[in-house]
Amino acid sequence: MRVALGVSGGVAAYKAAELVRKLQQEGLDVQVIMTESAREFITPLTFAALTGQKVITEMFGGEAHSSANVESAIEHIAVAQRIDLLAVAPATANTIAKMARGVADDFLTTLYLATTAPVVVAPAMNVNMWEHAATQENVETLRARGVHVVPPEEGYLACGMTGAGRLASVDAIAAAVMGRLGIAHDLQEETIIVTAGPTCEDIDPVRFLTNRSSGKMGYALAQAAVRRGAEVILISGPTRLDPPQGVQFVSVRNTEQMHRAVLAHFPRATALIMAAAVADYRPVALQTKKMKRVSGRLNLELEPTVDILADAARGKGDRVLIGFAAETENVAEHARGKLESKQADLIVANDVTAEGAGFDHDTNVITLYSRDGSEKAFPRMPKIDAAHRILDQLRALRQATGQAAAAERAR
Ligand code: CTP
Image (cartoon, rainbow, N blue to C red; front, side):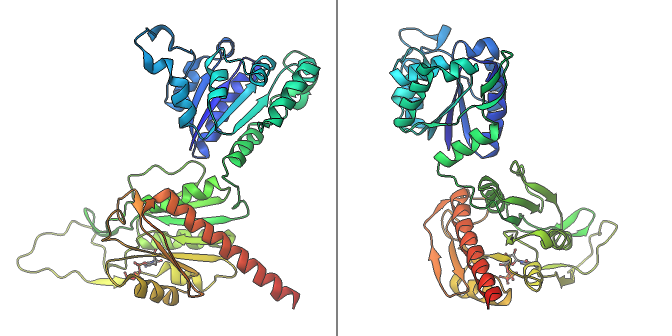
């Protein structure tokens, strides 16, 4: 989701840098817009470096502007249409007044008029300016229009006075933004272990057995769960992906290490999602020296690895266990079989031969099979959206187990 962050002039402008970071951690794409006076307090370079995007500072593209530069002349409309939310933090008395009156004399205030996206405003100013009837009236006007105002905090102000006027905490502003975007922190109570990627079973110092898992589905689940407020432990086999921000990352190589890592974190977890493509077999013996070519056939003896999901299910308690079934045929039959054999609460099945599904794709086509016999099929969607649908189900299952446990206690 895309958020435009308007920074207006005030000592608190530096805190907007921290807010950018926080919003990025929540998985949001942030476009910063600075008013002229904001640039007296902090340079656009800081925000450009944080966001990796050009910071918008001028209504008409600044020096680069020429009469032929139609693109920059209508940029506010393009940004207005592109964003899912406009946040203004810190918002000065002057910017609030302009927004309340519909004055559009710079990019930020013009964007406010041009966008239909929800707006969050976090004021910061001197206590007398905040309490002034003009400011209070303007804030009320914005509120009546549906703008979400995150009130300033009481405290010691940069001007030397004490009172209300200090910019609300970065956490409070970010929570307001997430709330308005409809990204609820509905998994705040959960500690979720997500496994991802392949496991590699070494044959000798240069060779190993593995599979085509990219880790994308597991990493998307970890990112989505963090965004919804869960504490996430991501246990990953080797992948080319960067761990999402905010997860506790545990890097493993083989099935045995993944098993140990899952068991180590399992006692404090409320859910386990086994998205990893775990090797089912490993070489009986690991050769310490590189194996040499032999004449004729070579037999490699393999032994089964531990079934991590089935093993975790034995000490399950009221945890929710979710497994994956990547199949090439008879998807429903195999998925239901795995529900039973692994004692999982939910199996996420996908036909890896279907278009836009499976290994290394950014999209997936999933069907969720539950123990109560129900199944939910979803159309092809980005893996991050599929992750949210799986987490919706996790939440429902956790509520159901919580209710069942409460009913049990009441008996
Ligand atoms: N799994 C596991 N430990 C293993 C193998 C698989 O925990 N040693 C988990 C996977 O992470 C996945 C689920 O079990 O969530 C199903 O994995 P899959 O490989 O499809 O199932 P298998 O039981 O190995 O069956 P098969 O390979 O024969 O389809």
